[in-house]
Image (cartoon, rainbow, N blue to C red; front, side, top):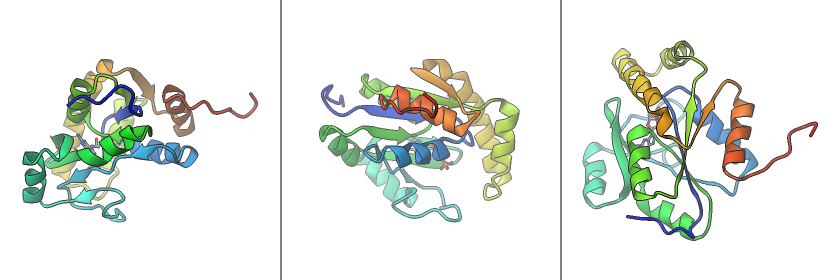
Length: 194
Ligand code: 5GP
């Protein structure tokens, strides 16, 4: 499925688990509420504080697989023991209205989007170091040891693939990383003192 070129721009943000994609996206949406952020479906259990329909649509595996076979996802992938997918229709609807659309997804899904939508723009968010990332992943007390191991394994794979992306941003300082994403998405904001 190709997305038409005159549609709103589709931006994909990828990066290893724990790198801070969620915080960056929240920050970005605060300054640019016109961006539409896709809400993914997942078979993962909700973490404490996560809200159905806001953070994710939490689905049973059979419902998720039903949506896969009905073509309901623009992309989907298995990650660290769970499945994740981008619901197709809302993304296409917002793009056709000319709105900038943002996906925050892992590497396999980003590759599918790249293939099906060559006009999409792909940003990779990288940690300052692997050690720092490991601390962040281990610091998430809600994840089991097994889940942590899987996430660390996938983190290495994702970091090795960063050259596939249109831009790589190091998340050393959240505000600075956010500013770089804004620029890449074509939202010019004035920095204090300029
Ligand atoms: P978490 O379980 O930490 O919320 O997410 C695990 C990984 O799945 C993260 O890298 C996140 O970006 C990714 N992810 C979230 N939603 C989707 C989706 O719809 N599709 C794909 N491919 N990955 C997703």
